[in-house]
Image (cartoon, rainbow, N blue to C red; front, side, top):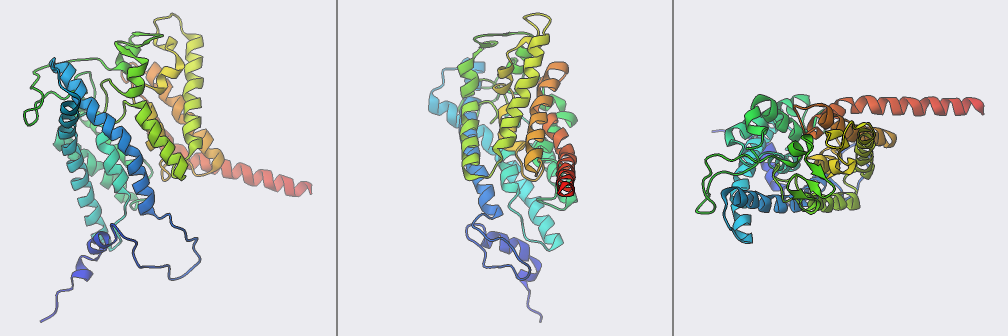
Length: 379
């Protein structure tokens, strides 16, 4: 009787578990390669660590916003654990569904399981409304992993950022679950924490800004300090600029993300925001909102640090990174200010520039080739 060969049938899955916490013993067999300590696993783990501050502040903020909406006087730890109990199901769905597809795809193809989804699975819940139905989140993950990544060849071959594709899927396929003023608040009690809220509507900072409700002190009822710390409604992990800035420092210090993309994205937003300020017809117009406010409300900071810098879908050339980042920030402000039906513009801006990143790199490389040819001919 033939012996059942588990390694032959489930080789990809077995290898993935064996190498999860240790370096595999495989080495390059042919060709020359640059060898160092930074493999895909380490890079992905660094990004996950950089996301932890945004996760912690976002978890607390979920409980805070529920406490305010329900008229409760919850303590710090009550709010934190309430938020944790609301966010954990999002992560369970994200990782169980996403990793199941990753493992299945690797097994079918006979390839090793890639660690790329470690980051996507961490980001997806952070850019979703806390009360998004879990079945919708599962469909979004399926769409992002299969349509956004696997059909292009898997990690490293995708054109668009998978996490943003999941967010876009929810926004366009189920708009009532990802837009409006009521989706940013958790409305149900969890294990005795909080209480059920039948109906509650509270405008976000972006929607209030679009209506001209801003001043030198802040936007709507939120002060500048609230916007920096992240004590306002929004997607789970996108509200705290300070927590995101800590993540940015980690990514830049370790060399995982490009500071050029981050800086140029900020410059692009400030440039267009400044032009809008100059052209504002009246003080209460959205065009008149101070340009730097765009950096601290909505998903601008999170998108700039964690998604625009995705090394797979962003520009690869050094000059292209400046162009790519500038256009990400510029288009974000343009979409916000001139599209009344969509006050947040970062998601569409990054997806648009993901599409054009290869063209930007091509133009930069072609220009460098022509410049060097002209220089050689002069000699």
